Length: 154
Image 1 (spheres, helix red, strand yellow):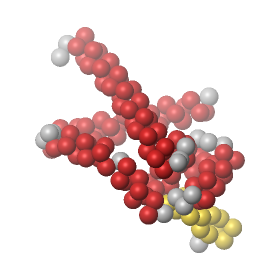
Image 2 (cartoon, helix red, strand yellow):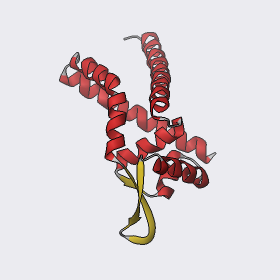
Image 3 (cartoon, helix red, strand yellow):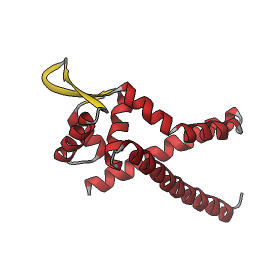
């Protein structure tokens, strides 16, 4: 591949990532509207679901939100049955947040179309291609995380 072709391909990849981000945002907005969650509430619920349990402070750091904002989100998620607050067994004054499995299943159903589409997409790639895609996505995620941290620090 020539240097010019490589630049064009790189631009195409960046454009595709932006469009993917937009489409996932639109999907999340649709899902959130079905379950009466704001976008940021859905994001925080996803963070909690991914890690199993998390402290409110860690959720604030991970989400990049002010702790007071996170408190409001936690209150809404708890009130609507998405999460439970539990006492931290390692710190009696601490609180852990845990996603409730019934609600997680509800979201899984709403994302079933996307999950099925990705499964079908992956079926069209051989093992080496899937490994390359997985590595690319992991590196792209790390690049996005680094860019976010740098922007937040400046």
